Amino acid sequence: MFNPKYVLTDSIVAMLTSIAESKGIILRAKILPQNEIKLRRQAIIRMTHSSTEIEGNILNLKQVEAIVAHKKVDAPSREIYEVENYLKALKYIDQIISKRESVTEKTLLKIHKLVTNKTLPQNQSGYYRTGPIFVVRRRLGLPSETVYTGPDAKNVLQLTQDLITWLEKSRSKDINPVIVAGILHQEIAAIHPFNDGNGRTARAMATLILYQRGYDFRRLFALEDYYNKNRAKYYEAINIGKNYQTSQERKTDLTSWLEYFIRGFKEEIDNVKTQVLTLSLKKTNISSESKVYLDPDQLKLLDFLDQIGRITIKDAVDILNCPKRTAQLKIHQLKDIGIIIQTGKGPATAYILR
Image (cartoon, rainbow, N blue to C red):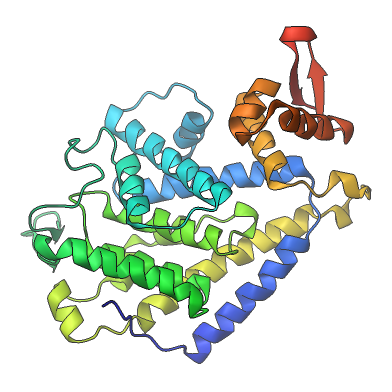
């Protein structure tokens, strides 16, 4: 049975309160849909770049941005695969949210399969490890040092299932979603259930929980940036001891890790709040409510438009997985409020951003 130990310190409570206050401000802020789409796209680029760079990926932010835009990048195939894989994992997270699916063990395995596609053998991608796992620190001119030993492979299945069971129960216990995401992140890293891709899987799962439980902040944040700014501090914060068995025997206290995790989340949300307020429609001459609030389906269509440059009714049907009539309605609403314009006629009809 997984039963994490932590203390809600005054510092943690204060930061969670501040995050909740920022949440209200960000959700109420009136910003043009075009600006919101750009911020969301930037967040996807930043979280993908940082989460892969933490693991040693050499692509820079501009190269990741090019991959998001489906442009050719001159780089080793593995580096490109890792970025494309993380983007696919984020799209999978969107699907889970839109379909209101529960997070299960299969979700964890699917995310791992996505982030390690073509970078791990097929029998390891989306499957638990069958042997020992070690986290090794390599320093130039010095011998390698084993800093952490994961639990025995035979225990991985039960440990992971215990974690997922706790995750589901955390809903009824009304645990703050930021705390749940932090604990999930740390425990996946501690179990190290896979041969590779544990960090990316843990970070993607944490993002999924935040999105799912109402802490998506319009999907404008990229918590991975905070970890990537000081990787040594990230590894120090997430470390629970020399090995998993010892840490569990000592009933590891996760308070220190949660202080770090929540501080990073607050810092990122503070940045988002600043951006949103800067772009707020209160600072413009636009007052039409129709140009402010869009539903999630319309935002998905604008996401697609921002990346591809044009959209058809058929595209909208595929994106929203809805009847043609519903897709037409969503497209026409965007057209009526002046965000998109029509090009072509008949079978050649498409829509582009104004």
